[in-house]
Length: 89
Image 1 (cartoon, rainbow, N blue to C red):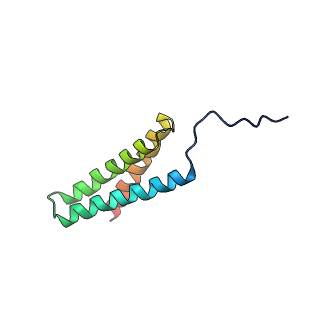
Image 2 (cartoon, one colour):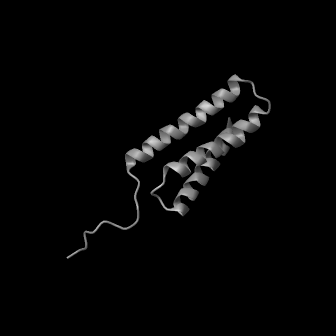
Image 3 (cartoon, rainbow, N blue to C red):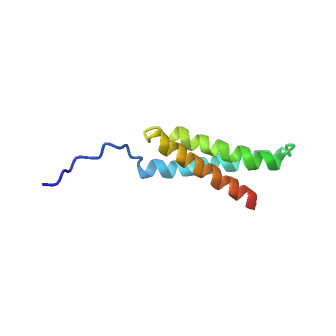
């Protein structure tokens, strides 16, 4: 008889991941809009460096039940992706 016990590793529900995606995008776009609207000095550097770091921090904090290594990896992927998008825009 197969073992039907749930796995011991924590999982993150799909609804929480989708909410996290929307929240991260909203924070990133709000930060970029605020920088552009205020005509901040070094706005390009702020958008290029600060926005990915803030988004990575949101991902890292919101995925609490996930193991530390997984949270760090996902936060790094989000930061790199937003950095690359910032280079292209």
